[in-house]
Image (spheres, helix red, strand yellow):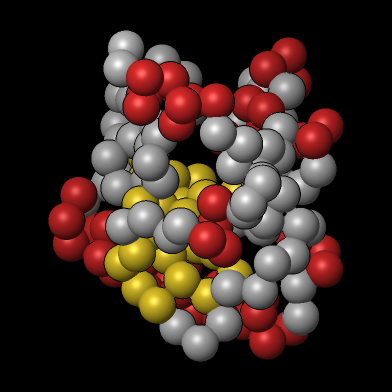
Length: 139
């Protein structure tokens, strides 16, 4: 591994904030938010939607910022559908360290899903707590 790669690996994405100072691969740019492909995407088309104002937690966003983010999610879905033709989506946000947040600037994940990408997708986002992911359906 090169010295440059090691330095990048050691870089703290919160100091300075990666999303404020060095946005990479921006695909859509609006007044209050922007979107970009995730550098470490978990599936083809994995995209982040990020408010421009530095805000650590989703619940501290203004209603205008939430509306802008939702509009970008819908726009990005159209772009992802056209380019990757996924079979489904997971949309999620990590709020706080206990929930897995590592960059403390709100970012919403749009994760395209593909038939067969996991053995059993039942439970979807419930897999954040693996023992609780699968549930028995009562019809």
